[in-house]
Image 1: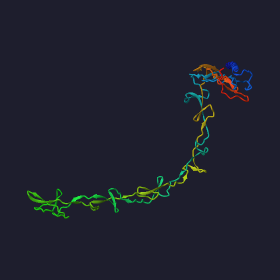
Image 2: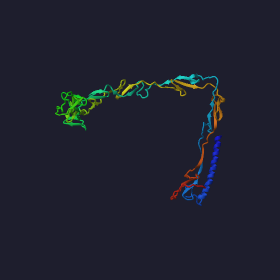
Image 3: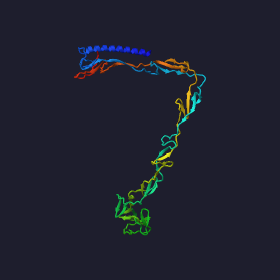
Image 4: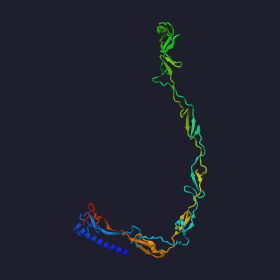
Length: 423
């Protein structure tokens, strides 16, 4: 009934809109076309020439689209006019009687349930392996079967260490500088000789003040030394009586010692030669005091690791255990729990409308007993009807009141922008 009423309303609206369209079309033709009321040969049937003679027009048709109804919340009733949601069932106190074959189960919060062993499928090869059950394997990489060897040298860590000929000592050179000289193949530095007093003559002894003294009552005027010098002698008086004679010994050079050479007033002090860096033969490097060369060892022949075998293709196959078959339940209404299929059911209670509640909308009760169904009617569905102008031919004008097509005569006027009709 609701659907029929809605359709009649839509048809009446379409008739009114069509009549209004015809009225506007007549007004436009009267004002925009030429005074000649007959159709122009430049336009298709049903179209008239516009006042500027550039296009042809006719009034647009107002059409409606009745799209399927919809619900913002819930779902449509069978007749498609209203929206509903299922009513909420209220928990019921009383005896927990389960259907035949079911019993309350504590692991399911006291829900009625029955159990049966699940069906186990055939064994398969584990994920990532190859082959078939009973012959599953994985591929492994080949590796060396023994210790690498050295063509020369000694295997140390992952390299062969080859010891070459002893290093050749570098050339010794004199570290010539502003103080070190190289003269006649000798490397030395000069150091001034120290000065020292000559020894006292026979009979004289050294005393404080760097003097030579002899005890006697008379003193010569001078004393002749070994180097033929004649220093003056001074008499030392005690109570106007000569008690000793003294003289100043001559100061001379101390010499350079047994290991150094005298060079004028200087001594030549030997300087050690600097030995150049030792070198090794080409391809060897000096490590400590030895010449060493490193080389890569020769790996042993590759083979399959222990537990694997080589197949006909040269690959290494390692056997792996089969994977146990997966468990499943043939009845889609059951749920798989490990190795068990579980069916659940509600308690045996005769349903009545009082056991249901609508949180929103109006309650609607259908059926009785086991067939009882209680829904909550939320209200009318969304009509989703749209109305607007359209053209069977041509394009709408910018004001959506007319349909425009180009002239169809052999020499049409230059195309013009789509005009905007305001009546």
